[in-house]
Length: 282
Figure 1 (cartoon, helix red, strand yellow):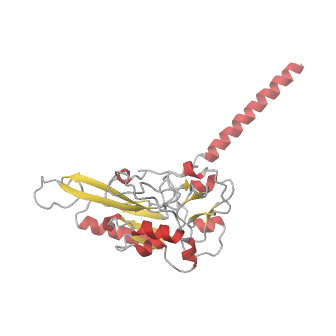
Figure 2: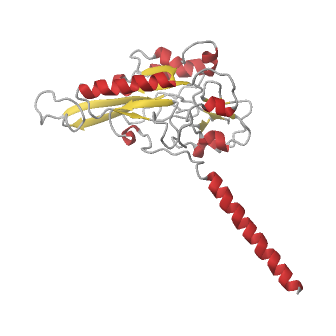
Figure 3: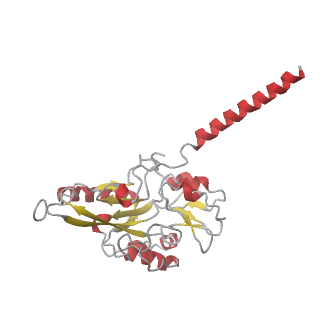
């Protein structure tokens, strides 16, 4: 956990492109789901059916092995001030707002899924993103509970782990990811991660000046529990409202100390057993 300026370099890429990622500005998301459709079309992912979940106009519900972009719809009612909006009309009149956000794999700086993968199917790419190699994955599922965001999942049709690749094949051809290309409002922005962070900070300042004081960034801080995300968000409410953990931490953070304690315990047990045998011989 903590800052890691060059994940690709740490992985072994001596010369590589600058790290890229996503900045999702939920304040301009209109919930059109163009990103979901573009992601499925480009990556040849099966459709999820047209059965609504009962939670608004959502037919996918969450990220999964076959849904790598998911647009959340959150309906809120109350006074404008309580909802973090400028007042329109009577101060006590009930207002309604929709919080819409296109969720995706966060491509963590410290990715627990990479740590636990026993086959090397999960790798860090030259762009600093996290990628599943389908032909290496054995479908063990260790990566699924390791993800602090609940992103990665097993595809029922292939039996392998799957998640957003940040369109690795398109990046190699000098193209933007399919979801960012399809977004009509530029809610999903793609580019060098450092530039996106600067742009996001300016956007938050603009919203605060407009009276939207609830605007805040999520996942952009290199000092957070995953070392900052390669895909981060501008939110208009608490992360939990969008189904995001408020304080994510790489789940393998304590593995070194756990192994050290296990080694000490094993050594102690071995010493006790050896002493008991030596005592019997006497």
